[in-house]
Image 1 (cartoon, rainbow, N blue to C red):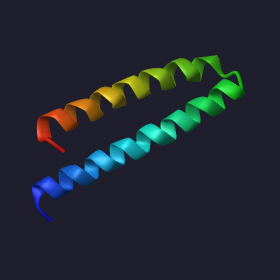
Image 2 (cartoon, helix red, strand yellow):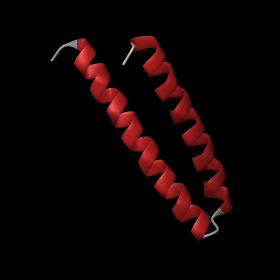
Image 3 (tube, one colour):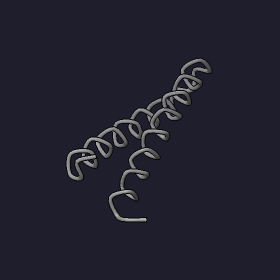
Image 4 (cartoon, helix red, strand yellow):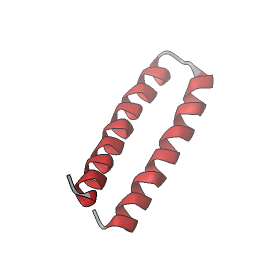
Length: 60
């Protein structure tokens, strides 16, 4: 497996984590778990920035 292919799979994995994080955030909102909602929003923002940087730097 070449490096470009590995980066592409890492990009897809980050997107999968982002999508599952949105689902988990939705569950936290429904259960009114305010402490975890704040943490999850921070994690999702960080993950979104990481996805954007990976896409821009590596031209995926």
